[in-house]
Length: 170
Image (cartoon, rainbow, N blue to C red; front, top):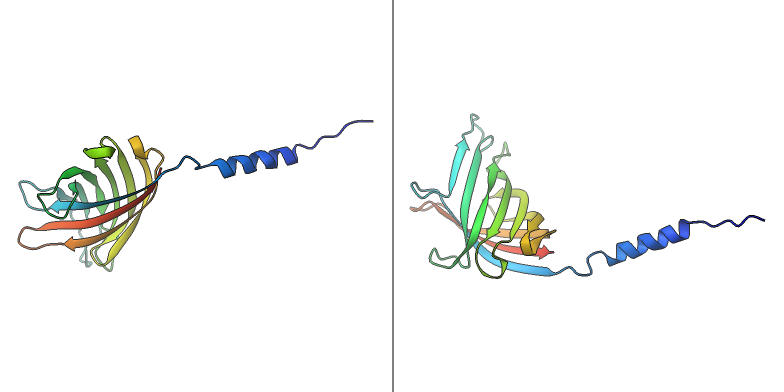
């Protein structure tokens, strides 16, 4: 008489074991910081590299590049903790909206040498939520989201300040 052994129960058990042990060593971190963007030459941190050729409202078709400051506070004198580096093409025919791809590169403190990669939609009205899709250093394999609100935009100094909350699982 032949002995029959099914591997299905064993495979299901292994799958369950792997699925339930994922993320056991994960850490959740909340960061609060301020992005400072300056449009004034010669110290501009954001420039438009391609201007739109359309007459649509907003910046549809334009592409901006930025290397903004990340600071602990909203004051321009607060401690510099990193840079926000990325690209933002204008993507809406109806309002000023960008698809932002950026890296938060931390240069001070506990997360010095680490970075977060963030992607998502941004407008100047209300709050914007974007996805954290990766990271380096202490944020290796990061995922999560950011929420930001613009505090100051325009004015005589043409300076933009945005408050960020980042919720990171890594």
